[in-house]
Image (cartoon, rainbow, N blue to C red; front, side):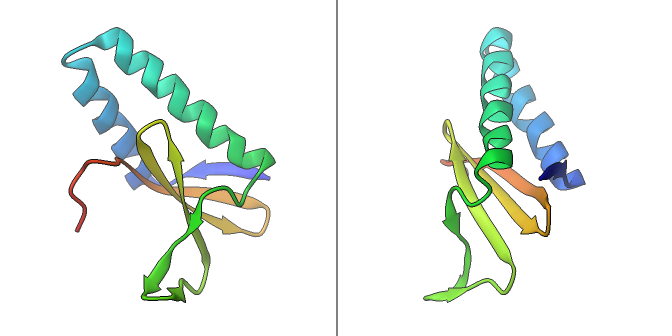
Length: 96
């Protein structure tokens, strides 16, 4: 398996780390490392997390999953031999 990040996921990672670093730079570095380690687990176990549904009891047509790492949701797509991290956010963030 190969791991890739969308531009939005990279932007999310930078935003999350910067937010934490404003208050505690050491914690930001620790959390960032933890998030990356959790994401790398997907290379060994690509179907961790919950499959995303597009409606009540209707799974998405592609294999899109949400994986909880620390307090962060990692949304990713499994496509052939590749895992594409689509987005990431803190579990308490308001999502549309």
